Length: 461
Ligand code: GAP
Image 1 (tube, rainbow, N blue to C red):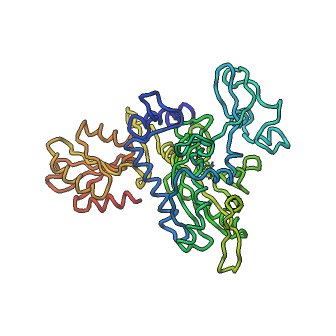
Image 2: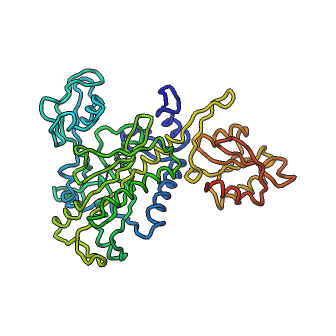
Image 3: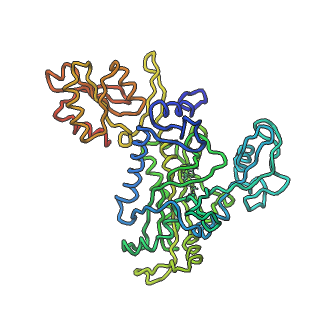
């Protein structure tokens, strides 16, 4: 996409999202709060459909994965054992002139096209750049930069009335740890046998240095994570399996295949818990970026928790007659990031005759609103209302009588409604209505007796 192509513009999407009730800045009347976002009526529907699709595919349609939902605040020792207290931070620098705050890895990546410190400083294995080789000039204004400083990503809070250090707790930066510390509870109570998975959807919080690119990097976001417990000999097999599954899920949302790719982490980039990781990436208007990480976490987390809690986390495998600590293959996706991806991928501005039409081409099964029903003129309100009420039992339906029919179609195009049903004078004569397809803009006459079945088939296609 060229940069003057309006469909490549994130600003146009942000503006559409606000105008049509998908996403608003949090606490906007107070100027907003950087890194926090609210979902409007259209956004919340889209979010739920994406989430339902993930939950159905990951949990309901399988017998080897079960669901789970944990408290956001956990015992602080969880974060000590998991390594987050020690390792979960970003390095940042500030510009002394323009006061911009930047993530060091982003600065280096922008300067070199590669964010991995090891490539920039050969032989360097850690996260901290060696002294003297840090960029010193701000890329925005040329001003002097401060020395890099550590920026802890976990939000702190206090539990209970005492304000001492013992009351410190953290908002979870990933949902995964709750799965690890509950894996024995879940496995025993649901009689799961390795290989099996535990899936969870929930809020995660990171005090990101530079929240940016709309909801892409937020400070409060929702994760859809699944931890799959396997025998250590089968790590690679299950890793490849889940990578394929997850890739296919994004395609099932209607996201264009050529906009999706896989990228393996190199050693310097790996998280402290991972043996190997491959990201699924999407080409956003602001470049290729991570959508989801599929990681082999080995038995790092279970072993850490076993040591820290003193509670045995091993599993006796009845088939192999062997006791071991399972390895974990993790699929970790962001709900908000997937919603942004679906929006970016569906967003188009095109010419129709002399006019411009903005359209969100969502796959019908995830469209936030499935149908809109219009009487051609106010006189036809009564039969149109009846048809809308009938359809509402099965589909998420809007009844709309205001404005010209052309304006009503355009409004629905902008929120991605796949089909519009119009009741006109012919309806009174032969019980047919027109069904207008959002993408082709073609209209077909369909009898009211088979309308619901006709639409159900189209919407599940
Ligand atoms: N449990 C592993 C884990 O949390 P991660 O790569 O840090 O791995 C997984 O995060 C996913 O969570 C990312 O691929 C992304 O979709 C989402 N995510 C992470 N940080 C985010 C942020 N600040 N804003 C929105 N989504 C985020």
